[in-house]
Image (cartoon, rainbow, N blue to C red; front, side, top):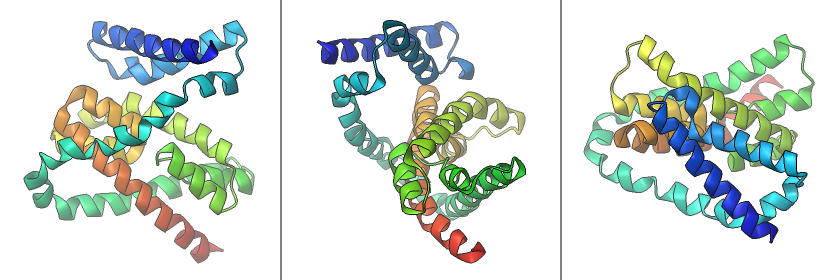
Length: 226
């Protein structure tokens, strides 16, 4: 019974969140992902349902995250000609963005004198959850902490990125999408697709490449500064 309830709750809350987002003209602070997550949290806390039981019931949705991520390649393929022209600046942006994402997190952590384990878990905050968990475990961090930092980064990035990009007058959907995927992984990609298909395609590319780049850079940086 809990399996059916979890599926109905998840789909129902997301549809409700989409409705609110549409009524608010898709304002970045009305992110369907944010509203959906908060809504599910409120319901399972109010009903006293352990998260483990809820997650077990929602496993079919979790399983579909893999095929859904792979499907990002389809809209990107339609932008292949544009991608070839932007290849060099995108690679430069990827390397710089990945470095800043890692180093800024560690620097902020050091300012607040966070324990070493927390700093390590914080370093892969800008990549999607499965990759961040794997990186954190391999370098001596905690997967659960990494998950929390990834969620906070994604929610915050998806909410404020549009405002920041408007302030700096970046209007090219490919550039906006790449920035969203690079800084806010899956939630940023979802936000990019909500606004524009081209932005969503480049956001998906950035999310995938940043996962790979971060997995390469973090061990190198640790070896360099150890």
